[in-house]
Image (cartoon, rainbow, N blue to C red; front, side, top):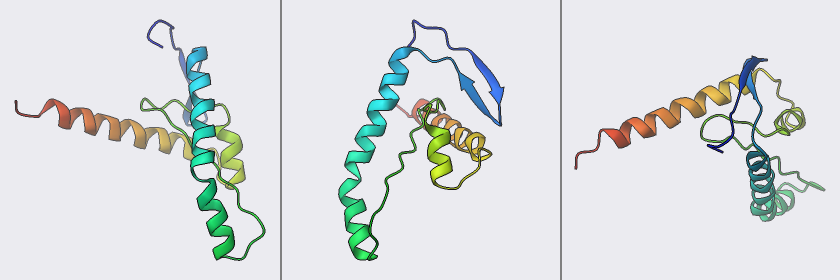
Length: 108
């Protein structure tokens, strides 16, 4: 990812990025892993609440705020507007900065 240049442009309160191919494949792989990881829980919830089916909706955000291309589709499944994208990216960026700040202030 360091080899490719990433260009950012503000759009809909979030950022649209021209990401390298490795990033896209990583997001797709991570989404599949999350769905399979929570599939048992989905079945358990369906049985507990006596519903016919449940759906696992993966929300994957990288440490620097990159969003998967399917992010908007997942938000629609949850009946959430696109306004939340910017807030999610902001929260991830602030948490990343907090972790880095804590690491840099460690005493040897």
